[in-house]
Image (cartoon, rainbow, N blue to C red; front, side):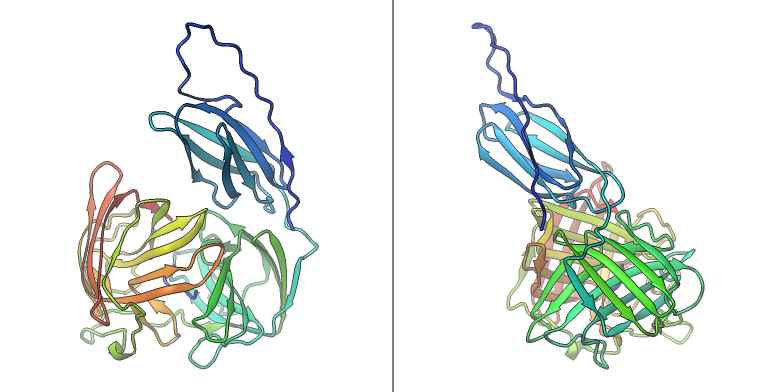
Length: 436
């Protein structure tokens, strides 16, 4: 999305392993998974044991299903333990893990039974404030987007959180009603982030706990959620780190209507600068140049934003982020691209000039809009884990970015940019950028 507002019972399942005696003259086995490659996992989660034979060291990589897997351990040679979280969704979950030696590999498939969101909450929270925005159909036809906080302290006049506060952030979609009041109905967690009516965006929805200062923030992403909206009442049940949080709010459900806001472009009045000339106010915590790499566990994704900047061309937001144990960790780059076409299918290859002024083949510089939302292109570094805050961040101000389509399903990204302090932020990465 365009704006970044930024106890489990373990059930052990032992698998029996049987091996036939090899003939004395049979070749020595280099790599073999002896316990099979497909496993059933209980809805309550727990440990799954995988037995293998290998003359070499092996590594385990999560290919898909990060939301289901808590951790992977290799306690002894020949044994892999995959620990699953409880499945609190109403659907079966699939996780895929690749077990690889130097020359060979095996693909392990885990099928976890469906569960339900618990009616007995681990955390009960009565929100006294609801603050946020109604965006209308800016993010696709057929659905209105609503993004808001349920909190105990609310936001200040600049749209910023207060210290020592609890803020549940919900990014959701309702039917296209052209109303800034959150529609009545039941909203379900959408892992695919389809943007369909009555769904909750799984990428953005989170809990933020502020410390003594707003910069001191702990972030925990929701892994499941259900929200029931009735007249002047919201009941949210969200799973965060395996615990169910029941959040209630009673009051006016109307949000600030920004559906008619001009987000950019000249509208026939010359080249507007959407930043309001706020160079001096732009933030960066970097003290030196930064070369960003994505060599280990990471994810790259693109999202189509329509003609967000109102210049007649398609806009894409692209994220490349490092991960550890399934969670975002370390350096992340956010690119805000305006193409030279009207495609919705990820045709964003080309070289972009970084600028404050929207236009063809422009990568929008990072800035904070009047609603205190981070917009445009950014670098930021997460502290790590499922509950983490920012360690460093910087708005990208100038330079260039090139996205090269290699013709084999991968892109090469070459970034040579500068933040508002003059620090050089660079990247040269090749990989698959998935559609979000």
